Image (cartoon, rainbow, N blue to C red; front, side):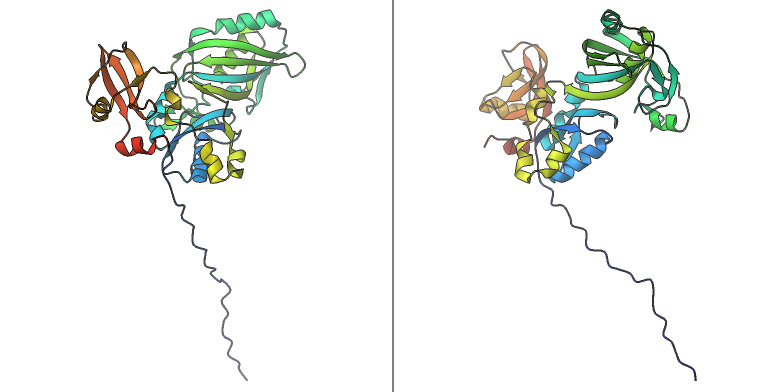
Length: 327
């Protein structure tokens, strides 16, 4: 006797729950994020953008995944001034491990040389002084500098070395913070420098000047232009906040311009400025100014003053100006 057996399907397709679409909203201003170690600047940006449900956001300068600290995040109208922070001077707290040179110049690379450390405060001050002012740096292979559309660190990971050209940067100040003479010997310094300065290269150069070699054991950005870590917030703290609490941490759009001279316009001149027209002003010539409406608080944009004329550089749209009106 034959029994017909109906085959039973074993590969059951379980329907996926529908993806919840994030309802984006207009957010305007600047968040001072204290970026954690191990996260790229873009990853940090995307996490913050999702938390705020922001329509538009951008960061103001790449911070290495191995570095922590200040990463200003611009929302909405503030993105028009993100280049200001990109071009601004930066402040860093760097921890140097003396006596060891590594592949790549940081703690992630293998040790390639060890030397005894015989230094004192006077030698440290003299070595740091050598690298204050206008100096020439060779960009490291472990940098985001592009070559044929690819970052140098991508070539480095593949074991390829690209010929690089030195670039000039300015180190405004190097301040001694701490010296740990026990093994490992560590030197902590604060560095104020122009954009494009490679702190790992500076660490290696200071190590060579001290005669013992060094690598960068830790890096924290503490300032960018007129803003610093005061008022910053961590990603973990943001995640634990309510939306209203997060919004309260967003600073005004003009915080990135706060060290520029301010120009205040009448109602008539404000309208003409927003249309791109030049306006006469009694203020002295200036390369960069922030421009406000008659209430003194409504940001209209940025510009410069040449031969007594106020000339617009970056303008907010009427909708953005309205959104930024003080409540």
